[in-house]
Amino acid sequence: MNEWTMDRWKYFDITHRDHVLCNPTTVEKLDGLIGLLNLDRGASVLDIACGKAEMLIRMAEAYGVTGVGIDKPPFAVADAEAKRGERVPDAELEFVLGDGADYNPEAPGSFDLAACIGASWVFGDHRGTLRAVKAMVKPGGLVMAGEPYWIYEPDPEHLAAGGLSAPFFGTHVENVAIGEEESLTLLYTIVSNQDDWDRYEGLQWRAAAEYAREQPDDPDLPEILARVSKSRDIYLKWGRRDFGWAIYLFRRPE
Ligand SMILES: C[S@@+](CC[C@H](N)C(=O)[O-])C[C@H]1O[C@@H](n2cnc3c(N)ncnc32)[C@H](O)[C@@H]1O
Image (cartoon, rainbow, N blue to C red; front, side, top):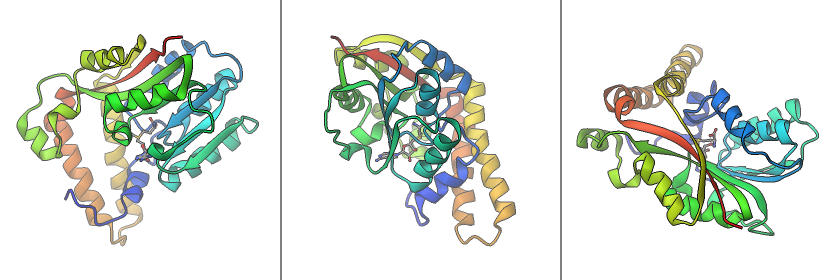
């Protein structure tokens, strides 16, 4: 089951089709965080693995930010473009289809804010992500990272079932400490609760079940349903209790 037979981007497109944010944060919490950013009008923002670009678009609505969003599958970038057209048609936002790890801006170290929310594997891990994202912002710029964390010591059965390695994720306090070790100043965190997680996970179960009713002849359907069922069981058995999620806001020193 770990080996993909179907196109993995198709799987994520289907299972996340009802998500506005492709992470366990709510839009209300995200708006609260955006309100605290105090960005200048027209500030420049980079969002690596931007998904459907909801965060960038909310920042454009709030502050008129300019910026770049990068994501790998075409569906994410198409969603982002469509949303930009509807909500902030005049915003100077560019969406790039590609691997976030390969992104080389003309002027690294020039963004007012750079983020990577929920895709730390792009840069190896949480520390690698903070390093890469920090290098993208100007001195005094803001660094945002979204990362899971262990609430309790993970059950070895959970790790085996999920194909996870415990050291890949830290605890909440360790995620903060890694930022401080990278010479970043912690400004704020938003943490998801079980309601937030239930919504993030449950929307995937619902999307897959609805897709099965709509497309019963899709040859990928057995794999889609098997993957969702496995991930749901892991969540209900272990993840719901043991696994947390937070967005960390840091500032790079001047
Ligand atoms: C958990 S989702 C988070 C999306 C978005 N940041 C959000 O919070 O709504 C992870 C995202 O990483 C993207 N992704 C995965 N590998 C990537 C890569 N190598 N480069 C850029 N994006 C990638 C996926 O397509 C997906 O949109």
